[in-house]
Length: 288
Image 1 (cartoon, rainbow, N blue to C red):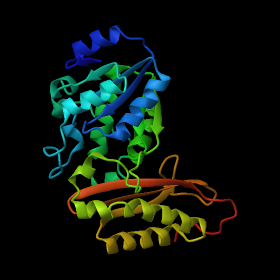
Image 2: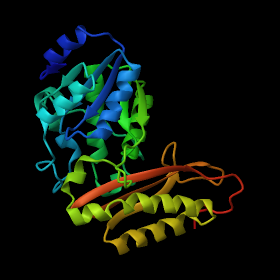
Image 3: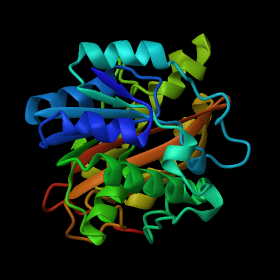
């Protein structure tokens, strides 16, 4: 595995590799969920490129930028073991050569400002901007993103379509612990007691999807899910039923849906989602 620490080193490394590239952008703190992205890229592409960059532009005031896990050597070992050809470890100067204040920023309307975007203003500007920059540097055929960050996946897909970027964005299913908790770098922040509670987030979403299928309105399901999480000790930002394709409010005839949530457990903010299909003929699901 070649490790490139500058744009020049990245260009030199890419020149040695076949052009059919799969790309996995990460912020490090890698786990089996990230490795599932790498494995998907390895199966489909001649060259696999991964990046590790903790992007300051997507962290708001008071968020965990400084505390975010930085485990580069352990991450490098995992990536090498899973067949990554090139690892890009850029600095701020490589990503924002004129400085963050002068960086052209990418804003994806609507998707940037709903759900997590409502509670983390500016977050998705930072995500879209850094991913656009990385795609320009790596020039992959396919970019692999995890569906745990469902809104991020849909937002980057929309950005690529709007800007006519020559890359396919592929979402990879969430990897879960045996008890159902979605794997996340931030899970390391949880205390033992909180870790025991955390799987209830996904369980609540699955139960909410079942209630939609049984005919309950979206609003009733969302409110009941928030109440259930609160009773368990979570502090929910939201639970929302949305159309899976674009995270818009579902129309009466929409079948492919997703229920999403963000909730704090102690100081840790967890996100998760559950895709499902509403059966034709179901009377429920209307907004109230």
